[in-house]
Amino acid sequence: MAIDYALLEQQVRALLAGERDFIANAANFAAFVYHELPDVNWCGFYLASSPDQDLVLGPFSGRPACVRLPAGRGVCGAAASRGSTFVVDDVAAFADHIVCDTASRSEIVVPLTIGGAFAGVFDCDSPRLARFTDGDRDGIERLVRAFSESVHPPPAAVR
Image (cartoon, rainbow, N blue to C red; front, side):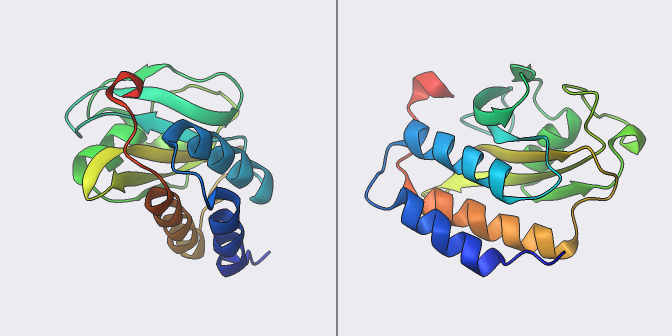
């Protein structure tokens, strides 16, 4: 099933237009992606002021999640510390995977920068193996970029 990421980007920009609050837009963004992408069971943010800090749970949609991820650990920590998107076809084969939801089988994590500064990561999990393709990588990166352009940096108390 081909996903029209150009249309989703237009919808995200319309959804977030006129609002700059990080928490409000992050909550709507996570819910939007969760409901618009097929075969996902969790989408949300982990936040930190720098890639070498623990990532702390931010707005998300899905089952309750791990609250704090140690710096550099797991798929989220790897994406944060390397500053690049990680796509994992089988999380059970990722040696440092942190299990928050046992139903998750594959994952994509996109680093989040706001105004050129690291702010955390956007994470999506799927109960399906190899759910995320190169097209999803490009599309979700576009969506995250649209989100980051819509907000002010999160307040320090949130990170």
